Length: 616
Image 1 (cartoon, one colour):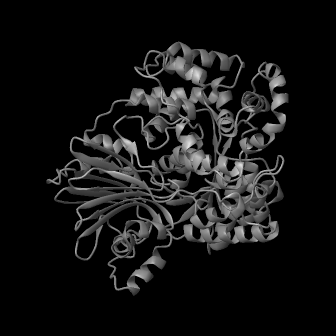
Image 2 (cartoon, rainbow, N blue to C red):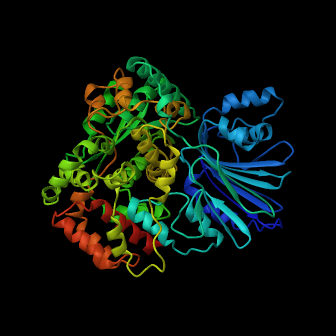
Image 3 (cartoon, one colour):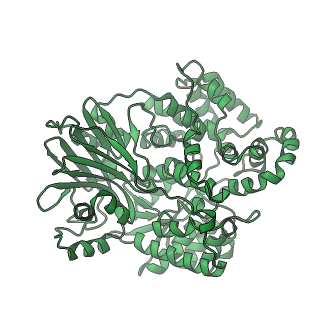
């Protein structure tokens, strides 16, 4: 795991490499163990290293024998040993055991896309091809690892984090379309960033640019659902057994390291399965890390303890109290640009807890998107039948007092009656939408010189690509390729790397996803039941209460906190709002405190936005 950075002079002239050092310094938390720089002619590359594999010999950048190919990488390649053997058999000579060196020889042997298709892992990589005077940037198919880039003032600059790019002296004009998307989704999807002239390389994309040319971007891989006539048709027992073994193989691969590996254990089926399989695949004792809350409807330490006891893990716990006033500014600083998922707080703290014991932790991201774990999937399947009833019930539901409990009935009911009558894509967004177009317009009143871009345009492009697949699979594709990389994986990457901890996500393994993307709806969601095949697959591994329990995760009691200890802080921050209309923001807080609606998600987002603005 690393933080990478680099520069390319677009006119092919000698590049000034001096900004690379400060760019790496800004990412020291991503790689506190080592730092390296290399420059030649129009290009300069650098990396900070968190040593996980080949602790002594994995210094980056890494070059080919003749120095014509140079690589820096952020990530881990779990099949590097297999690829190494294949490359050595064709005559390539290796100087290290580091997985990054596989990229050098693999690029020489197979070319860019041939190499990318063979990689099993998480990565953001930069390859300088000296013979062709060409720079390549690539990101893994799920977007597990981040990569930012910008072409300004005759240079292309790239880095793992936005704060590093800002050390290169780039323009930093706020992008109001990105802000619009943030208010709709609570995160900023690729290719947008909060700054108009800086972009994220989207997941599964490859950027190429030759010295003297312009950047070209193309997709090399997008995980897509199987067409309805290409779904797996075996019985449930057979598919469950296959899934269990694919998960076991993925966990075994994700445990490869020369340092201790632990597991984030939330008490749910995803993290429970990872803990069980890691314990069975590890000769020694596995370390597990859990977060709890004083508010009982959010606390799940009891279930986590059951799994920990069953597998004899070295278990560590932390109970969170409403200390967001202290923690929020610290977390905002770790996330570079506005980021509003409130579960970043417990993820940040569980990463801090784990970093005191291990250097690597397995995390359960991807299980819900691949196997059908969200309440919105059930709601979407029920909506066509219940839409007429929802229309009649809406006036009554809207008058329900707002609860502070975890995903309360009133919150889910409001979301359902407001969106049940919409077409499938708009309905799914309606279940998840943070702020309506009307509220976004009021919050940004007077700040625009042109009509806002439609945040759903990217959703519609994805929707068109999945025509012919089952409706649930099409909705899951939106979450897998948009929500997951712009929200959950950003959260996990930044929160863990802020503490120099590598987080690995075994569910997002190509071999696991291949099966998940070919499952029919009936193997994922049936009635009110979710994750049917996954639960069947892990039944032999986990206590019944975990297998058949409600969805778990590191969510926090934000609604209660904003009606209690956090309200004065929130009011103070929003009173000084500059990026959004202060009165509209304070009105949302008033309505939340009065229990007229649960505005905890948009309020958390507005707090994060204004705290980011104050720090920027």
